[in-house]
Image (cartoon, rainbow, N blue to C red; front, top):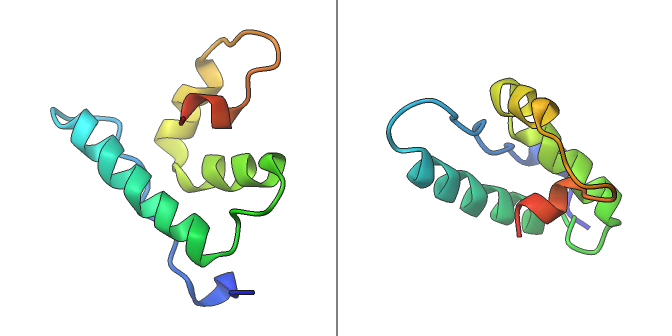
Length: 80
């Protein structure tokens, strides 16, 4: 099992600017690599969601917290 203490988390998701689609794609690719390197792919979805929401950064997390979802929707539903 990999240790996350030697891994750098992805840079926070940038939510301002004109290249938001590109910024999302870059973040998603970096996060996918982080998730694989940190051996998170076989962890519970709840843990994976918590790590994702931690990695997106304060600005993106603030936006996430203002969103309204259907009952039962979790963070992983948003990134698939």
